[in-house]
Each structure stands twice: as structure tokens, then as C-alpha cells.
Image (cartoon, rainbow, N blue to C red):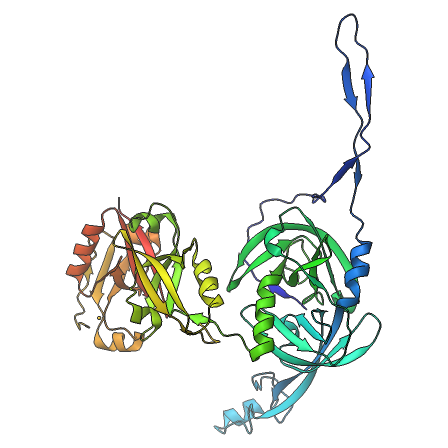
Length: 493
């Protein structure tokens, strides 16, 4: 029951896929041919014989600790009293609703009646302790009213969900049993692309199914998945494999199979696993506290590309650029500002925004961290005491309406009026009236609100012109679009 990754991709070509990695050469033979006269002998080699791995010992060793998980959940479905409607109480199929509306009467009990629909799901898991603790995916057991675990010896147990973590998609469940077989935990850090791995689980409910492939890549960053450096493989993973183990040739679990890339809902050659070290940290938190507590800085950040690096005076694209700071947050109390680039935490480099998110997320509320920050073309150190991250993670107005050109950017801008500032939750900014030239090419559009140039807030058009002039040919603009803020680099000709 894995998630399908919804991605927009352009497929440039189709190539046949061949198994590679860990191939063992043996039995190479050669023949020698005599040349004419004093010509040296030539060596002609016959094709090498290839010995592929035999996975049966791994399956026998690990298989008893891999379980099938059956889930029952109840979904509430809204219906009108006349039989129409769906989840939202829609009465489009109600033959009397139009009649009621025609004469100006409300549709009786519209969207009020609820029916329950029982749903069944399947997934996989593996036993990590002999007393019955089992790891699986959050999306396998989410919303479950009943969870049943079936072992390879056909025994069945009702399971209790100890806790789950949506951020990593890791869940911990428990069955009441003793002396259960367990898996060996490996080290995903030493795994390498090209190495053989196998997946075990229950695709489409088919218990104890084994598939094999290789590690395709490591530390994959997926959309909306900032806390997990996924292991990418070409192991066949299908609905029902979710929560099952990814196993190396030493018989050790190095990951939890979690997601696939698919346009059909089925396996298309790309699957992703949560590294087991990430999962075990979550498991320990869930087992001890029933939830995962993560540190919080209180900033919105974005990656630094080469244009942003150049505009802020960095020698290369690295770090996490602060585009917004939550009022009253640890970051604000420590003195961080919009336009700061966080390049290190406690002595470790921050190459991308996701590195910072994972590093801070691994800390606990109340921990103090030392941040290395790039500001005004120099590094500065800040000590921040972290708050607790929510599960749902996330200047003076001017009423003038006159539009003023934006200092060669190709923009016409004006200050926010009081009503706009209140609606957007801002104190100040410059509304883009028209966008053309370099600004339009960079992606600025009508309705965006310019908040700053680099680290410097702009509340008037004069300030914008001066800041743009000081920035030179590469201008980093902090804009707000809808409810989000981000830096956009405008290159002036």
C-alpha cells in the first residue's frame, strides 16, 4: 500500500534495463595462437562466466521476522436523505434537490447524514524485538480501527499502534508475544550504489514475496519529504510492500520500503526506502514517549543556487537561505534576519536547506545549537535555544497608490496600503503593478510583494532604487506571493 509519487517529468527516451553490481567473475579461460615467423603470441579470452548471488540463505534467515499487516479502517461518507451525495454531502444525484431550490426552500438535511464505509488495507512490517515490537509505515496503519499481524508460521495477533510519525512515515506497532524472530539492523551509511539488495513483504497480499535489485542512489530528496534522505533502488515494490524491509547481502535491514515513483500506481523501476538509522531513532522516540519531538528554529528557508550565492557574495552555492522568520521564534530571539544564509550547525556544514531541516529536526526542544551564518559578506556565529516543532509545520504602511518604476528592474511598484497590509499580515512592502524585462524573466509577476533587497527591507520606492543600485548586476529580491516568501534573483543587463 505504498504512496505513489506525483511528479511532473519529461521522458527523453526509453532504455532497456540490465542487472548490474556485485557480479563475480570466475572460470576465465584463454587460448593462444601462434603467429607466423617471430610474431608474438596473441591471447584470445572466452566470455567470462557470471555467478549471480544466491539469495535463499538471506530469505531463510530474515523471512520469519517479516510480517503481513492487515488493516481495517472506517470512513465516514455524507449522504442526503434521498440517496444522493458523496463525501462532502453533495446532493447532485438527489432527484428532489432541484425542486426544493426552484421554490426557494433549503434542501432538507443536506450534507448532515453520515454513513460509514469499512475499508480494508494491506501492508508489511518486520519484528525488531523479541517481545513483539514491529516497524512499518505510518501510511499503512494511519486511521486504522483494527490492525492484524500474521507471521510466516500462520499465527495471527491483534496489534496496538504505539505511535506514528508522518514526517518520516515510520510507525511502531506491538503484538503480545514472546521469543519472536527478529531482524538484524545494518548500517545504511556504508551501503553503496550498485550493491545488491532484496525486499520482502506482501505485495497485493501475497505473503513472503521476495524481490531483488540494486541500490540506485542514496540521499534522494523527494518533494515534501525534508526529513528523510531516501535510498533509491530498482527493487520491485508494489502495493502491500510498504513497511517491509530492504536487506543487504549480509542479511541486515538497511531500510524500510516506503514509496515508488509511478504514473500507473504500480512498479515502474524506481522505489524508495527510509534508511533504517532514521527509522530506529523514530522507533526509540515512539517507544519511550509515544511521539517524536523535534527541535524548531522558526524560519522558512530555501536552497541557495549559483545566482543567489553570487548576489550574496558567497564563493559557491551552499547553505540554507532564510526567507522568513516566525515572530517570537528562537531564530528571532537569537538575532537572525531575513537574508541570512545558514552554512553550518555545530561545526557541520549545511550544503542544502534540507540538511538544516534534518539536523535541527534531530535535536530536541531545549537544546542549544551553534549556527554559522553568512551575512553582509562575512560569517557570524549565533547560539540558538530550540523550541518544539509543531506537527503541522510550517515594517510602516503607505496608502499611496502611485506606481513607480523599479530602478531598471523592469517593474512598476507602489507601497502597500493599510488594507492590503492587514489582509496579507504584513507591516510594509511594495506591490508589483507590472513586471517586464529582467524581473519578468526572473519570474516576478503582478501582485507579488517586494519585502527586501538582500538583507535590507524596502518600504518605499526610493529605498528600492537605492538598494538595487547598491546590489549591482545581481539583485536578490525577497518577495511574498500568496502566503509564502522566497528570494528571487534578478540579473540586470
